[in-house]
Image 1 (cartoon, rainbow, N blue to C red):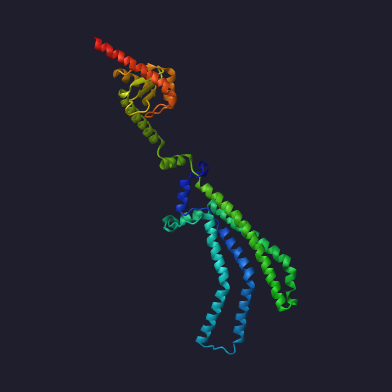
Image 2 (cartoon, helix red, strand yellow):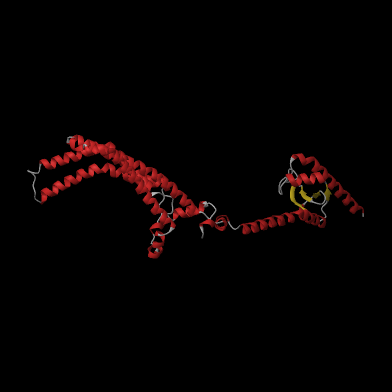
Length: 358
């Protein structure tokens, strides 16, 4: 899909899937620069010890040349001794470089183990696709980056050597210790400047890799919509479920209307059914309420079951707004509802007396 169609930032789920596949924003140049920087510091700190150890080993070998054995056992012992010294000398750099390499990766991408990048993929073995990756726009950019880095670091080295050139010409006039110190100083300045240039380029490369990673994760509007459907559910299905739930609640509510003692209306738009049983209720309870068509349905059921319908605009509005179905009325409505119930009870008593008289 064209990149210009991917205008939406990646969702958290898309980022998680990319991490599971081993696709992360990482700069190998930054790892190399940090390893070089730390190795240079270790060399600066432990250099005298390392150089002294190597010098001692060299003196010992040269001093024992005329007394040492030249058979297989003697040569093997000398080789083992030299290897042990070289391992001890290089150990600080190797340990620090390994630790920094691991720490750099963890800082860039976090600690996560994914086996997907190790799974064989036949597409990666396709020579045609491999060649296309090399000649693609991304491959061209990587080539330009590599050439630029070599040119910049090379220029830094050239500028350093050009500055040190007069001192290098005088090395032949210096005694060996002074010449060695002079060469060491030149090497240190050369490495430190090259390391600084490499570190700056590595930071720029990390920013570039981060930008490319974000671009590669961008999604189309359709993909975002599909992702939302998978994670949150189809909005249309959820809307149908909500409608069904509302219908079921209304159906249960309407079934409670025959138990009401009175229905309060406003009179056309709102209907609230109240039930009050002093033996099990501390206050009248709203058992059904509705607006418009639902209000008409509540009134029709009330009329069919002979439940009194009282028109009181203010009380009906307050009951509808303040009280949910199944809740008792608040104290501020006690007086108004009590008057309505008293009126209903008086009507019921009169109707009962008329039936007895007839």
